[in-house]
View 1 (spheres, rainbow, N blue to C red):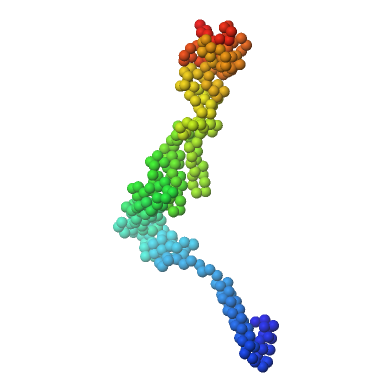
View 2: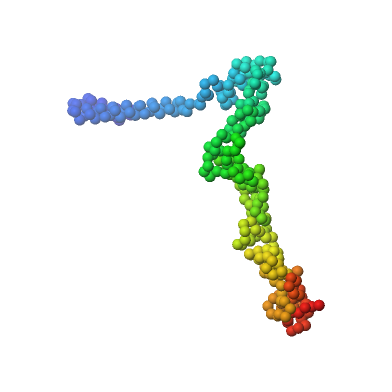
Length: 316
C-alpha cells in the first residue's frame, strides 16, 4: 500500500466512525488485499515460467529425446552409455550372446524386424508411414489412412496409398495423408496429350506438374486439347492460329504467312496468283513477269512466266 492510501485509512479510523466511513475503510482494505494478491500471483508465474515437457512413464530424456534405457543400445541403463559392437541392451545392461529368438541386433538393440517400424524387415529400414507387418511397411488399412476421399488423388490399395489413376505418380503428400498426383510426377507415365510435354517445378509442399506446349510453341485454337504448333506461319498441317491442315483441305496447298494457298489453277487469274503473292516452297513473291500457278489437282504452286495475260496455264 502506498503512503497516501495508508494516511487516508488512518484518518478514517482515528476520527469518530460512521457507517459510511467504516465502509470506505473496508473498501480500501479490500483494494489493498486484491492488489497484493495480484502481485503475488504474477510474481509466482514469472518465477516458475513454463514447465519442461516430461517423458512418458518408462522413458528417460537423453539429448533432448525420450528413450527407453532398458533397450536403447546408445543409452543403455543411463544416457550416453553405448553398448559395444555385437552387444545388446537388455534390461538396462549391455550383454553379449546375441538376441532372443525372433529378434535381431540393430544398433545395439534387440528388435523384432517383423514389427519394428524403425527396422522393418532389416536394420535401419524405417517405415515412413503406417505400420510394420510381417517385415513389410503397411501404409494403410483403409481409405482414411490415406486422407479420406475429399480433395484427394490417393486410394488405399494392397496396404499402400497410391494414385487412383494407374498412369499417374505422386507429386505431393500432405500431413493429413492426402496426396496430389499427375502423369508428370515420379512414378507417372510422363505421357501428355498430343504435342504437350511435362513441366515439373518444386514448391514448398512438394512438386507441381502440368502438361504444356513445348517452349516456343503455340497452342492451337479450337482443336483437341494438347495440340501445339512450332511454326504456324509455315506448317502445312497446322497452318495459322487454327492450325488448319492445308493439304487435307486442298491437296497440294502450302502454308505461307499463316494461310493455306495453291496460287491459281489453269484458266484462272486474279488474287492468289499475282506476282506479289507468296508462292512456292519458300513462300516468296514471284518476280517480275511471272505469276503463281499450280499445275492441276494435287500440285503445289510455283512461279511460271506470265505469257497469257495474267491467266494461269499448264506449263508443260
